[in-house]
Length: 414
Ligand code: SF4
Image (cartoon, rainbow, N blue to C red; front, top):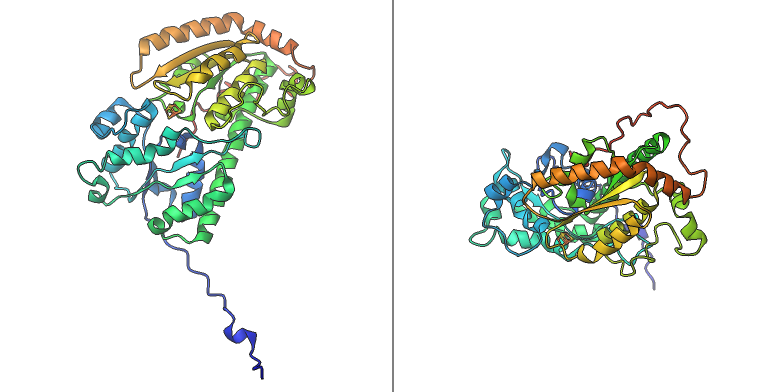
């Protein structure tokens, strides 16, 4: 005979919601290196959503010779390109150079990146040297003894595919659960907050770039596009070359924050779309078929945009010494940019040394060419595009709100 029981007797009752864990006193240091330059908003949003307070999220300073000498000397572990080598100085600064000690040195191993080109390219992976950088650098602090343990610091290097949004929460939970005492649900919420912060920041930055282009269009003024990897925004890696140019009155656009609005893109790529040359304005298969690497893909796309956008009359290409990823892109980017008469200047092999004198001479040369040829370049490129572009015609003669039309050269990480 069947015994009837109430299903509620043995049913699992929902437990009372756990009180939020107090992480407000936890101090987290993030080395400001590599792709942190374009993902910092994600990490700040993520940590804040976990309860880490803003004042306890600390970034290392820009790369400098002093930083490397004081904090990173003798801790290099690999013979590598400069942007990776300099990580030791950032680690050391966070470990030894803080008035208030950090508890966690947070240095994510980012394997793939969110990118505006995602869905139009094969993948958006990072350079393997970038992804492995945190573990390589950590080894330099374990060589003779465990410097992290000595200083009461936990090294957290979660492996994460930020480009594959559906995977990020599980990956971060798996590697951080013990360090931050995390459960999966709160990790999911924090990841969502991180992406929201990142998306909002990007939308704002792209819209500022659009305002600059709009100002240039209204006043028939040129601007400069910096074609580089995110970490060239670091004044110790890119040597602030764009700052020198901006000082001459030329607005600067960074590739990473170019506007990608449909109206603008469809106008710039109208002929390519009409002829069937490409399927979408974000399609780069016409110039770069092995489109696996996120930053490389964007460099190629940026070159295409620069070649078409009338007010981008000059492209500055920055590249670091020993960058194997950049080598095969030098000729294609230059050819693409120069195909429409746009000026192209390359600063290759940048390393620790800032050759101030030679940079100044080159900047003067660039400024001379910009002054001489920009109006011709604007006219020629406008003639290649359909009439009635997305920017308002010259009307008021008044400077819009973006007077002085300069993007903050580098994003503010605080
Ligand atoms: S992309 Fe180039 S500079 Fe950047 S980490 Fe890789 S090899 Fe180094």
